Amino acid sequence: MEWVPDILGDDFEACTFPAAGPDGVERTATLIRHCGGTDEGAAGVRRPRAVLFLHGWSDYFFNEELAEFWTGQGFSFFALDMHNHGRSLHAGTHGGYVADLDDYDAEITAAIGIIAALQPEAEPAPSVALMGHSTGGLIAALWAHRHPGVVAQLILDSPWLEMHGSPAVRRAARTMVEPLARFRPEAIIRLPERSFYWRSISSAAEGEWTLDDNYRPPRAFPVRAGWLSAVLSGQAQVARGLKIDVPILVLISGASANGMFWNESMRRTDAVLDVNTIALRALSLGRTVTLERIDGALHDVFLSAPRVRGDAYARLARWLRAYVLDDDGSA
Image 1 (cartoon, rainbow, N blue to C red):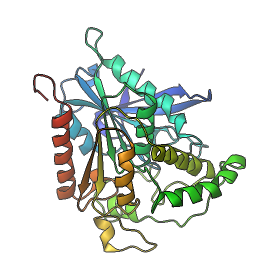
Image 2 (cartoon, rainbow, N blue to C red):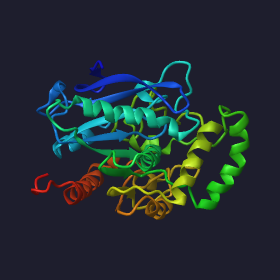
Image 3 (cartoon, one colour):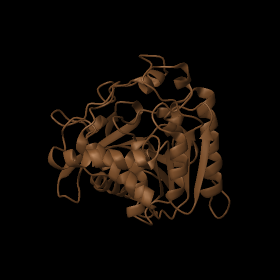
């Protein structure tokens, strides 16, 4: 396994690896680790805890501040650019495309194996928390459900657990999409293109975050029938109820903003998901679910305005103190 300097600079390294899914197809993913501000550097984990972050759809890992937060909490930080996304996106492939969310299982499992292998042989494998944003939150929840006993905590940042509006919208969409997904899974579904969320976060528009448009296009990747069918199927699984038996934290904005035209409220709301629907659906995840609603937050609460994301980090730190303390009371 070869670690090389990452696009984020000296404090980060990345390694690319193959993983074969349940269908036998080998796919490529990229694991990123934070090395700055720690005592481990490039030598390995050397910490009792690690966190693995999964990005959202049409996205990649770029939030250095998030990595620094986790390192400051005593975790080794890792992020995964899943296949057909970000650092793992290759010419000739459909950006963001997957026909079944289960296809991510192999690379997530392999990434956790790599994290464990970094620990010196004389030390136990680190306890791993899994964190996911938006579609990555849906993927993380389904993975934790299918792989009980592997991760110790689950943290979801605005997870896409349900369609906008109600379960009836999801059922209707699934009825319309499935025939096309079955016979022409890579067909593009023409939907209104909006870049409101990108506008609120990108420094090329009105946000503060430097984004690579090759990795995260302003209007996102084209929506393909197979991908949308996979998401709807995953959401249906959540609606039936998952059995995740570890503590779960769900962070969402205090309000949503929707519409075909930009309005100023989109600077302080979730302009992608219906947060009230997500709040209700979160109760289907498992036995121990904590919900934090962050007033003024964007779709990714950790990309919100400094004061707002400071509130989100404080709430996350409080939750970690409650659920991730050693028996001796040390963090």
